[in-house]
Length: 256
Ligand code: NJP
Image (cartoon, rainbow, N blue to C red):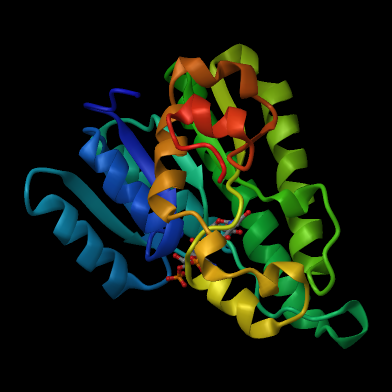
């Protein structure tokens, strides 16, 4: 497990779900965590809770679809802590779920703004800071949807495929400057996103029993593992937590 003492980690989409669990876990491992999301009151409450026993946590309200917000987020993290070691590009949307001919073009584009442009913004503004210090790690939260087609998820499949593409290109461009860029496909996770998926009733994922989902804390453990050198073989690709090999590497139970 990575020793994150003295390191600064930014997590987008940290107001709930995978992002919140990741902030809490990485703080437990010694990191100073910077929580970003639109729900300012929620990230402030989580940061206060993390900081209360012994951790260090900073809340920065941020809409990842807005370049200036992400630029300011990264500047704030560096100004407050003096460094940036890890960025977790986690913020993402799945709603509204709809088949192509029923989809609303504006809402479809809004998902592109968050899922694709949000990740691009993180890469765009974090890479120069990391490269200037000799390196860092960026984990882009991907999905099995990046490489498979699911009814009602044209926006989600297309945007996660774009995230995988960004992971590949960023690795190609900045590997030799010490910037480690890795995607993470977590499988189904018990968060608000799965509640929205179930409510849609559209494809087989919506039919899954909630007991099939892994807890967000498992994803947080995978992210901590990806931050360390043991995960170097996954640079420029999506690491999957759905496989027995992936779970074993992270130290999690095999699939039932
Ligand atoms: O989702 P959820 P998860 N700017 O809905 C934030 C991927 N994934 O934790 O802004 C900034 O509980 C939102 O905060 P707020 C998935 O695609 C999941 O499951 O305050 N933040 C909240 O904190 C996504 O990339 C599953 O509303 C924005 C967070 O995003 C990541 O995992 C499977 C924002 C969403 O929390 C986390 O999803 C899979 C914005 N514009 C991949 N818009 C799964 N759950 O099964 C939203 O393969 N957020």
